[in-house]
Structures are given as structure tokens and as C-alpha cells.
Length: 87
Image 1 (cartoon, rainbow, N blue to C red):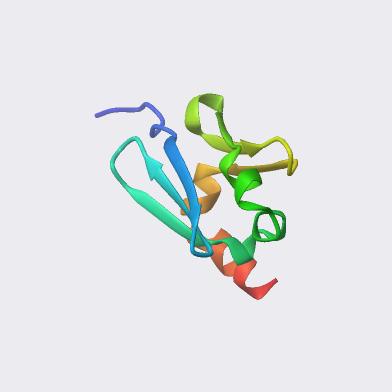
Image 2: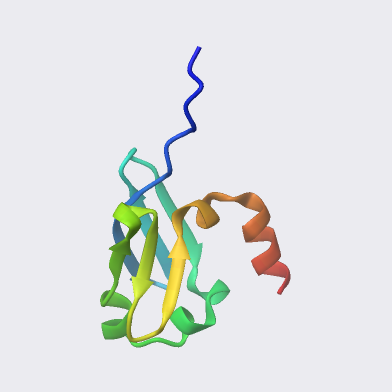
């Protein structure tokens, strides 16, 4: 029996196209979330959206010009999605 904590989900690539933020994870999953949920990303230019970097070895994504950070774990939590939809 393993007592170690589950591994943190980690991003390997990010793309914002067609009103969607699509994040590919190192375990092969792909997560797509509407840019509408993140006003700074929704209102950003294509160049600003393309200027991202992974933080914490892929546990998060940072957009310097937009002063925006997203965690991969937060994108995977259904509760976080429901809260964003109702906001």
C-alpha cells in the first residue's frame, strides 16, 4: 500500500484559440476551459495570450503582461468550474 501523496497534475503546453484555453498535461490529458471564465485572458490580445510560461514545474501557468496565474489543479476541480460559471 502506498502512502505517498498523489502527484500534482502538470501542464506541458498551453494554447488559447477560438475562445478556449486548452492545456495539455504531462499524463496525456487535455483540459479546455472557456476564456470567458477569466476576464484578463478573455480581454487579452492574441500576442498576450501566447506569452505564457509554466510555473512550479508545470503546476501553474503565468502570463506576465496580464498579471494572471492559473493552477492546473484548479482547472481540474469541478467545484472551481461551477463557481466560475455562476460568477
